[in-house]
Length: 119
View 1 (cartoon, rainbow, N blue to C red):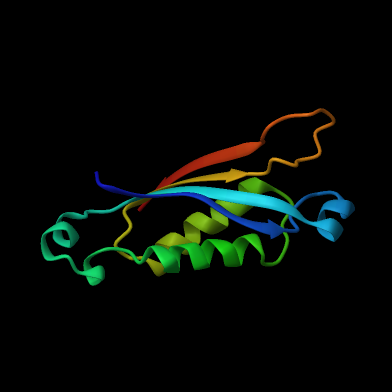
View 2 (cartoon, rainbow, N blue to C red; view 1 turned 180 degrees about the horizontal axis):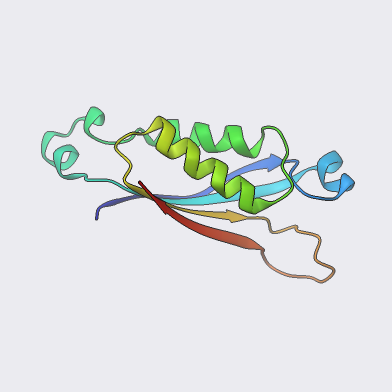
């Protein structure tokens, strides 16, 4: 299957289970792989035959900066639901949500969740 890949869509969000996370906010980022048949877009060179990347980025940013949720697992689900709701050509999606400043009691480079969903 063909894929559109977007890496490192980032914004400050207020997600987390701790009060200080919801008060101070922190950086979140999302990587996406959207499964889609790109053969028509490749042949016709028409945006209408694919998914507008800027529209996808806008949807992801609105979730990252939107109403807070407790878990990045929920953020990942919201992103996948938004992709399927708004981009009917999408057959599947892999969503990775990164929370590098997650308060885990030790210094780490990143905490992330990865989900795969399909129609």
